[in-house]
Structures are given as structure tokens and as C-alpha cells.
Amino acid sequence: MNINEETIHKVANLARIEIKEAEVPGLIDEMSKILTFMEQLNALDTSGVEPLVYMNERHNVWREDKANTEIAVHDALKNAAEHNERFFMVPKIIEK
Image (cartoon, rainbow, N blue to C red; front, side):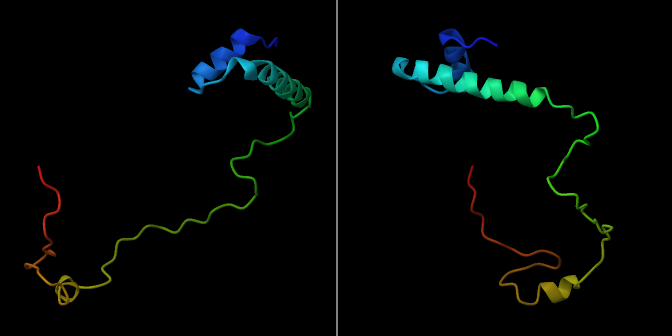
């Protein structure tokens, strides 16, 4: 791919970054080096390589999600400053 000033300005616009005209020649050189490296990577044969989601091979072991009551409602409300039969009462902090 041929990198020119127009390409640099287009990429900067898409990335929503501001570049100065004095920076354009250096950016052309840097982007050309990046694309050359990417071409080298694309030349590698990766047909036998499995795609990775994570960098390591460990798999997360998920436990089954079981709902169980750890504490009774009346026990949970014992230390509440204000409460009714089932809920904590808290002061309103959001106003319309």
C-alpha cells in the first residue's frame, strides 16, 4: 500500500487526532514501516495455528449459579437504621 499525505490526513481524521503539516513526512515513514512489517506477518503460514481468545491456554471453570438464602430478611434488617418489614429505608439523593 502506498502511503501519502492524503492517507495520513484521512487516518488522522478517522482517529480524531490533530496533526501538524510538519509531522506528515515522519508519519508517512512510520506508517510505511508498520505496513511493511504487517506484510511480513501476512506472509507467514498460520494455517495450523488455532486462534486465541486469551494468551494462555487455561480455561475458566465456572460454577453453577445457584440461588440460595444466606441470611433471613429479618436478620438482615436488625442493624438497619431505618427499615420496614422487607426493605432498608435510605434517604433520597436524586432529585428531579
